[in-house]
Length: 95
Image (cartoon, rainbow, N blue to C red; front, side, top):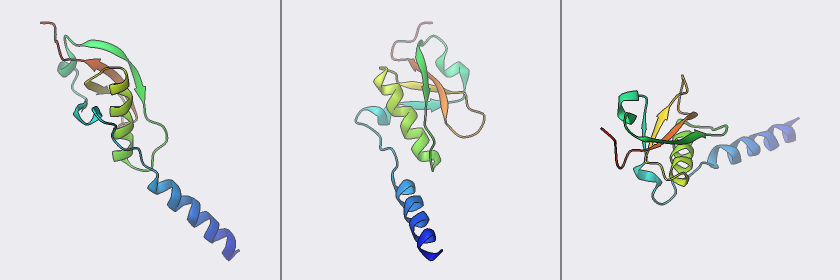
């Protein structure tokens, strides 16, 4: 039984330390829940974070995925935390 606990503890520790880092360029991607912040922006597509051990990890995943779509803003749609939303390009907002 002690061996099972040690193995389980090792698995949890390994999973907890495996967090998504922010890819180069992704650090400037803004996460917002304010719909007015994306008014006039170009919608690029949905982005989603996979199961995460921390809110910071989920935010990094969203930033990375939005950046891959050439986005600079994510309108977060998840009711709790930041697990999914829509990527936008707001660099050249339309009035």
